[in-house]
Length: 280
Length: 335
Image 1 (cartoon, rainbow over the protein chains, first blue to last red):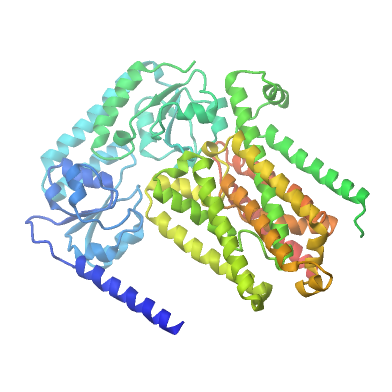
Image 2 (cartoon, chains in turn blue, cyan; image 1 turned 90 degrees about the vertical axis):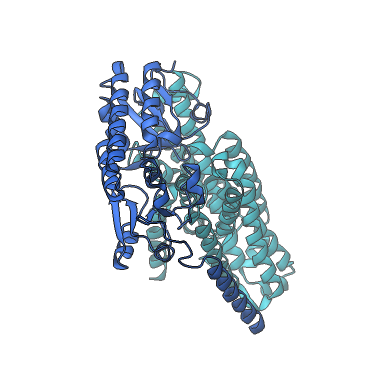
């Protein structure tokens, strides 16, 4: 037994040493300019959209867009990235989201270690434009940031114009299928709903699991479905579609991430609203 | 009090009536108030399509909760008898943990496997539960000197390891997968997973296992005296213990496949049943199943209505209600 424990310990230590050697610190050369770590896929996309993808030295495991992002070193998940790994990448600044999946503790730990963090808010279109501007200023890309902010505002206005006959109706954003989750007050989608001239049918704050029965029996007039469910999946699970509701299945890729992709997403939303018809 | 045929019938019909009342309440309550008349007419195919679909969802959910609760209650009664320990329940023994590990392994192997429904999770979950049971039985067979406390403690350790591995796997998941998995870990009957196929399949398996346990009640009663005494009275004690543990494991697997990891039902239901109608094992598996079913149906009804139109995981309610209830029963007994 003692031998087994000793062997296991030795093996563990050896594995850790090999791992440490392979992922050694500071092997990246200086790229010139700021060294940036982005702690959310939306932030990673924003940096690329501002034309500063080269400055990224670390991203989360989930940063998969654009393609180039996949080659950047990973620092872990959004909720619990490795602070140590981030420190080893010697960033000048770490970008985080205040309203998404990042924790305040991560930013605090980085600040204590002397790393500057920039936590942005993405709970409304306006806040998101502001986030673009702050990141742009940081990276010396003010003009690009201003362009991005304007195209986001324009896309939101386009969607609002397309809302036409749906203005004044109750709407809900379904952001998850299993379990069924919806966006409540204070979220980005609540703000988009308000900009479309509709009211959010989910009065609770934050992200909530919602009852299937509520969707069937007290249905909002418009459902924005960014749950990523396959066509027909909701109907199969619910047993029927709520009558009189316009159920808009929208691309999750473009709309579920509060970043530059939202510009494309909101344009698609505008087209979907123009063609929307209630379920029968 | 001796168990006469009359008392057996009386207790079971009273508990069945209670379970039926819980199910009726669950059918009549929901996120959106619907008059009882309309619910009844929708059950018989009346009303519009949406109402029929909504009432259909309530019915499936009620049946699923009842079957899960019954399986957990019966599993608890068996584990408690086999280990002669009132703390034994599938959750504490690591059987649920094993099932959870099976499910998370399957989800890791096939991303978004949680969304593929009970069929995607049930198989691996059942395998995990049975592996945990097998481990306990094997340890018990090889090291009879450990005694029943030893086996219980080993179960707690199995649970700890499974829990750690589950958390390790979950922390590597993406946001939406994590959410879906967390709900499952807390025990939930929310929308996508369950249909009549699952409810009826697990219901039939549960009924068969509970009946088997009731029929073996005499032998299980002898086990309660202790293995040596049982052996002295001519019972192949070890075999009975093993068969009963395996049956408990299968029941727990049914429950986990249905609703994920629901705690406290397997602990509270057998205790309450023992209080109400005695600890005779010819009756206890049945009474624990009926009480467990009714209890979980009520907890799930609360879970889906207290914050409407939002929903809570049922496991949150079973723990909130079950833990104080268990503590109260314990304090009352000790006085």
